[in-house]
Length: 429
Image 1 (spheres, rainbow, N blue to C red):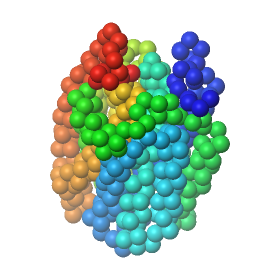
Image 2: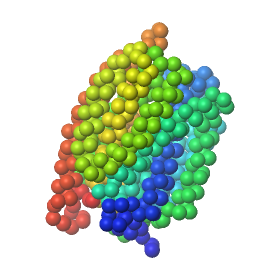
Image 3: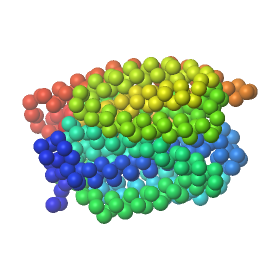
Image 4: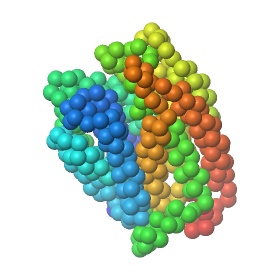
């Protein structure tokens, strides 16, 4: 009763979800919804925040980047301790901190207070994501993780379908900070359910209860099997964040879509993603995670080249192109998350996920800053050099494909290799 492991929660025959596993997937999906919505929310609110707080576009960019870099720092700092505690307790502590930071965002009325609030939110959000992924890896075998990741990543789509339109509507009626109060309410409900119903996730504590945190961090950072996973994570994130901060400006000023029509684009593309997420996850488990990743890379490259070169197209054309691009991106996200979750040993999962989360945040912040150096805005509002960002994304996608090939080879090799002593193996299952 003291320890909860994947074997204790596996569905019948290891192929179907048990009732408790379904609960875990659902609650982590709701948790991910709040994290993603909080992260995504600020970008589309830029047109409201900048005049309300009387800040420049550059200062607004600093606010967005502050979250990412703070999350990156916290991921590194927490990595050495991530495997020393019950993952449920770790998740609750940092989710409470995330909720506090979000409340501070809602109460902010100056540039400085909003900047500090986003830093606080980021400090806790990065570790929340890492703890969630460690719980998934602990409780679900690799053969089921594609489906799990598909459902959890659908929270990204749900935030687009439900969260963003509702948040934009609330902002228009009650001010830009109203959606942050909504997130706090949802966080309170989700946190309460986790506290009451999620079982302890602490079987990993029997593996190395007395390891020095600094030694654990350094060991995880220098394990050769993990380095390729870290490099792949960084490359995937850099590519993903090159376009995101500037897509709204591009769609409005270059494609000619009105602000009012943006909600329709978010709604339909989000609905497509919400439906496709679980299907992509199931395909990853059925046909192979690397094959689905390869498909996602090909689809992403084609659609990015089309998307970044659009100019004054009809609304339905933009929706179709955006939806196909989202399918490509989701195929990469879900399959790569499931496949790379097999790299760390059980004793290192918390540290590995924390470092990966840190790399994601820092890479995302770096990509947003690099994108700002490339794009420029003409006097008529048109965004210049956006297609250059698309070309860079194509290059990062190709490089991530090469890296993922080696990740897949290492994971499949570890799965078919004869058993070895745990302390001598480089890649755990």
